Amino acid sequence: MFCLKAEERGEDPNTVVSGMFPVNTLSTKVLFDAGATHSFINLATAKRIACVLEEMDVQLCVSTLVGSLYHANLIVRNCPITIQDRLCFADLVVLGIHGYDMILAMDW
Image (tube, rainbow, N blue to C red):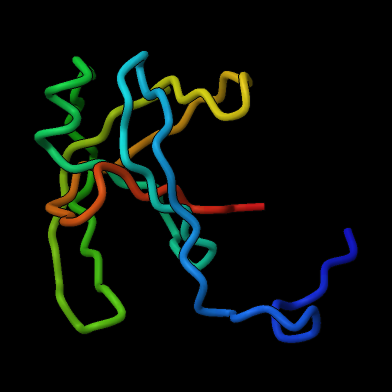
C-alpha cells in the first residue's frame, strides 16, 4: 500500500483525530492513535457500556509519550464499535486513561 506522510501532504503530523462513536451501542469519545501498539479503554467506560472484562495471562506495562507508566491486566475482547455504519470489533486493554473513553490503535 502506498502512503504519503502527513508532512508530504502539507498536513500537521501532530493533528489529533478523535470523535464520538457508538461502542456497544453507547456514544463514546474515541481517540485514534497511529502510534499506539494496543487499543485501550478506561475502566469506567468499560463498565458503562457493559463490557465483559477478562484477566490477561500477563500484566502489560504501558508507557506514554510524557513518561507516565501504567500497568494493566484486564482486557475487553471483541468490543463492537460502529464507524461510518460499519461494525468493527476490537480487543481493548483496560487502562487508566484520561480525556478519552477509548484509544484505538491504527494497526494498518
